[in-house]
Image (cartoon, rainbow, N blue to C red; front, side):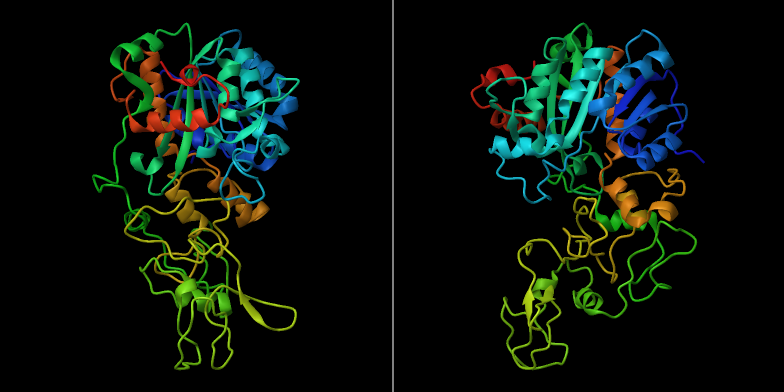
Length: 458
């Protein structure tokens, strides 16, 4: 069964950096038909095409294949412009989850990762096809992380977002947005930047200005109103089979292959997780008792019991000489249970690692399964993963899930975009929304030596 049921009055669309196609699923459900999808990894493109029937796939590095994207669209559709170009350039060079990136204001360090300049590809395709709308999604740092402007003989610092805005400025009006997707019913804390560009000859620009709106949907929830969707609510809705990492038999649901987790057996990792009280949101770093039940005071920096020298149920590593020490750093949120009464932490590509950011199940002794991670990303259960789990393994599937844009939000966004193309602004957010202000502030940080007024949306 296909995850996609196409809406009526479909509008043509092109996807760049498509990943597995999950994020574009929301735009498709809102009425946009993807004629071309471009992705560098063959297996991800295969999954994307399985869920977007009729789309033409362009495989390879877009720095070399962007002309093929344009020619493929022309072959499929003809001379008309697409209604939408969506793009999610890689965020690894921006993400706070990655080390070795250098300081945000270090433009030379930012440019060492070539992926940080892939917005040039977005601009090349946009200027070649002239879509009515362009939507770009990335992590928050995308708006402000400095790189060296590749257009200058003496490169000046600029953020990738500001660079893209300037590359498209002759033909497009830019509307930046910075939001926590929990405000749109997504059951996780996921702060993401969006840039929506509207072609300057579109009447939608005047309609938005007249109504004081922006091309984004109104939020449906907030922390202040106390109506975020919690992890507990999301898991109850999914109602997955209980799992336990103690053995293969207890770590897998035979009826749902995606519902499986790494097997830990009875090793230190399993016992460490089991020692964190269920539903506490607690951390293994705070475990203060010795497994041998020694009656001693344990300090925060102890790796072993002061009495029997047995490793504590904390994140420890064994040195070459046989001694133990605590894992260095990462004490704020690693080796921690998720809190059931709040939205889940951001689902990342590292959801299969116990030491990553808040990946431990709130009350069972295991990590979340890909089945659960996909649900928290609002990817529908009938999404067609094909044989990806068997052929490429859980790590590859978890990576595709972690990099997806939640389709619950993109469907809401897509409906707003379709409405403004139709001359309507009902249900769109206010231009005075704090998410606009936050985006403006970060973009100003990404535009040293530029006039801040030139960065404001209309």
